[in-house]
Length: 430
Ligand code: HAM
Image (cartoon, rainbow, N blue to C red; front, side, top):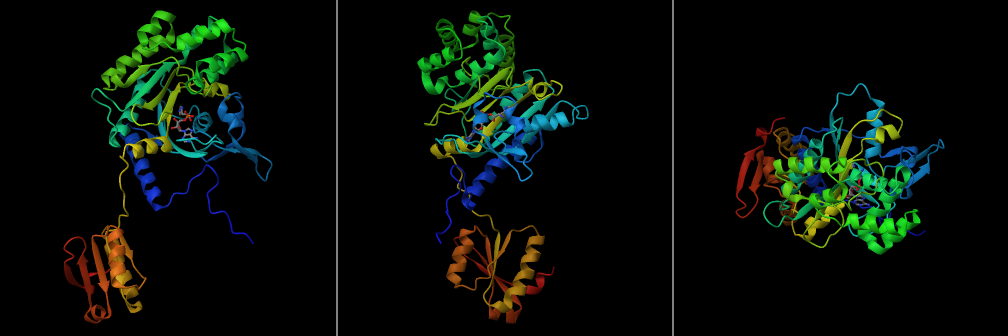
């Protein structure tokens, strides 16, 4: 019989301890920052009803769904993103939840994507969302949290050469403009999906796709010209100050400046995001250094999603920040930390007779808050000492026949000096 395939399913990852330590380091930063901003954790099952995603067809994400029927013939899917689950959970308790909500999660998400750098078929995504706050203060708070995280992992944000920037727009800028060209409703959503591809496929191919959506060639050129404007002043001059999107962006810029992140915000109407539920602010985070050119994170305001799903509309805004792209960037910049195992003590009974005493010592040390590994291998001392040093241990406690007979444990401080002491076993009473 042929052996099993040892590779994880295509596009998915195994996390051996080295990778798992890094993941924990990353998630700890995400959790700490979320809590620093007063956000509460929530979670949901990775398996959802398929209809949660297929209601709103047209999004690329729907075509990337890992969906199947369970044994009860229910159409289910592995979540490709957390936002619909959040919307479902909020809807299920609408009326009883005290708004505004500030919730965060680190869900694993599945998308049957074409594999490329920084994009896998499974990823973890830090999500922070605010429910029940219609003001752009929420957006700025969310961006500030992203900035706080980036600073913690060593990304330079201040000074003349920040290493990341946010490209920010408001969908209403484009929506109002396109309404003037008689492109609205479902067609507007479809046009946004096309525009979202522009960065990847270029101007000419985008124009062709727009024409396929029924936009005239002339209007397609007008739209593409608008997308090339940069900064709020240019945009305002083209679409007018009364445009709700422009007004909100102005407010956002003021608040971002006050929050110390204004210099990182680039107003860029070509950012529309690929998900059709966004209704207002949209933003994506990009690296200005290294060779990774895809978004590190993306977010936006989606005030109509609950209504689309059959609930009462509620202002909602949030972001998703993937684990893959940020690690890709940090790795390229040589800024991923070298994390070792974190054991404090290794207890080494050299002979089987010492196992129970070793265990007692370990229990006592653990009760005192130390991380203790008992090495039951009975292998040669030099291997044990090397293993203990590799595990990051500070001390090695050895129990040989002589020690057991004398009622002591030989304690060796590891590191340069390797000093040795002898402690009475009776000191370790549990
Ligand atoms: P998204 O732009 O589809 O938004 O994903 C957000 C982030 O997740 C991306 O910027 C990237 O870091 C990461 N990501 C997405 N797909 C992959 C993949 N195949 N492999 C690795 N990383 C990936 C959303 O998902 C929205 N639900 C975000 C949101 C929350 N909007 C409001 N609240």
